[in-house]
Length: 55
Image (cartoon, rainbow, N blue to C red; front, side, top):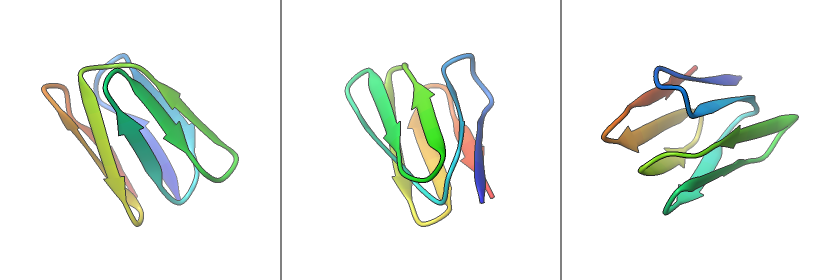
């Protein structure tokens, strides 16, 4: 799967993402970003304020 950010702060590829505070970290090839807050589970991601979505 992959992850894509609707905002300017999340982008990458992998099966999941995890974040806290103003950073994002993801397993798989790589996922990187910075924003208000990001939460991920399975193959989808959700961000507070600016949202992100992955399939």
